[in-house]
Amino acid sequence: MKAEILTVGTELLMGQTVNTNAAEIAQMLAEVGVGVYYQTIVGDNPERLEQAVQTAVSRADLLVACGGLGPTEDDLTRETVAQVLETPLKRDEGWARRLVELFERRGRPFGKNNLRQAMVPEGGILLENPNGTAPGIYLERGDLTVVLLPGPPHEMRALMREEVMPRLALGLAGTQRSAVLVSKMLRVVGVGESRAVELLEPILASQSNPTIAPLAKLAEVHLRITASAPDGAEAERLIAQASEQIRAKLGDAVYGEDETTLEQAVGELLKQQKQTLTVAESCTGGLLSHRLTNVPGSSGYYVGGVVAYSNAFKIAALSVDDEVIEREGAVSDTVATGMARGARSASGADIAVAITGIAGPGGGSAEKPVGLTFIALADDSGEVCRRYEFWGGREQIKARAAQSALELLRRHLLNRGE
Image (cartoon, rainbow, N blue to C red):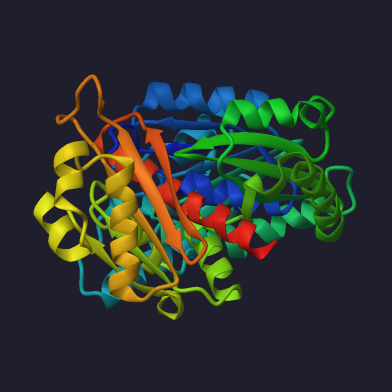
């Protein structure tokens, strides 16, 4: 079954409201194996809305339209759908009475325009909305199914989950269209998107079910594996096979699955190895500490950190040699290593990670450009420092530096555990 999601509202086009409804509807449809082929946003304009509905019903088996079911003149979805399908609207007297009673209980005057919300295309099923005045509508016309839902997310969500999904599942049961779609995300770090695609080329070239989609993120790559199967168990089996093939190609560049973050993966390694951690940050301004402490239970391994922004504070708080800063500059491998050494000594932690760099937009030079960053690590086995040249704006450089520090630490812990 091919589905199209049509969300209605000028506020969506203007960016005043984020279109979360489409994402939630798509996720729910995937649970019963319905693939969303198109998503369309249209404003409260009758001509453009009519065109969008005509296009949707010409290319999809299922149209889920969200928004535009209220009582005002610009709420045009039900009328437009009825017009395109050449189906008359009829009043649902039960819902009309409910609306009148609702306004009476609230002590509010009842405007007759509210009765628009009781109109249903002939042959359609009114879906009672316990959270609002605009009901949903479920309509089948031959091979086409049309679902109309109110725009407020909590109203849409309840109707979609409790009224629409059971009807769709029942309609698909026992047919060749009956299936589930299950997705898993593999998270990859230390390998760029182009390199990951190159390594996975034999797998990607022959994929059919499941499918694998590389998604580039800031300083990491996500690989979405999606399987279609008659049931969830079979879909999970197919995903497990694909996941095993990917891991065989990418090795420990795959650090986690689904919602696992890099800081969570690092935290697990620290706990397993019973290691404690401290950090010393300059250009990242505490971002690395922020990410580490976002993980519940991080107090079990994270001792604390220092944001040593000025040279004077690097000297006072981390015992960095002032002559080294004078000779080599604050952004240098020697200073980064000195920061890590000083943080470890002051905190008593097993491992220290330090970052110093030029986040920009100013402060760079030909010798030391914006984005130049040094990340150092110190523990009882010695010290190591890496040089990086990050790109982007100030926030992106800070984010990439924190990400690279976590990856340096993760690799170090993986090597320790071997």
